[in-house]
Image 1 (cartoon, rainbow, N blue to C red):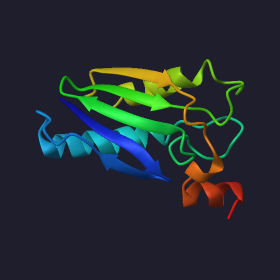
Image 2 (tube, rainbow, N blue to C red):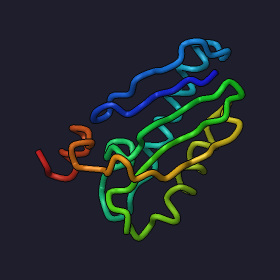
Image 3 (cartoon, helix red, strand yellow):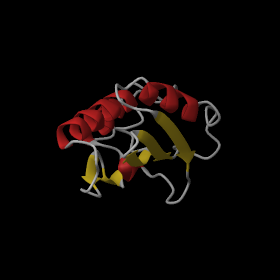
Image 4 (cartoon, helix red, strand yellow):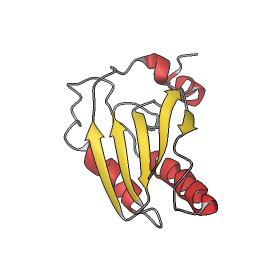
Length: 127
């Protein structure tokens, strides 16, 4: 079974399959810690973290505590496109209880500024 959170709008995440074998308290802690780890990763050209920018499309926490992340970039030609998945993998790998991290870069749907949280909009002066 997979515990899934999908980016639905701004920084709102939706929890998926409730039948995980991971105890609920541990799953909630891991989820919070994973989001916290993602918030430490920044696009070097934008003063907001990738989570608040809306670049994280999906986070799955598997029963074996491996984590699968679907993410995108603000633009397919982003200069750090080759490096950012490694930054995400390193950040999430440091979370207690995570056994493995797989980061997949996706471009469908394309990222738009509508995916940014209010926090990111304020940081960028887009309010």
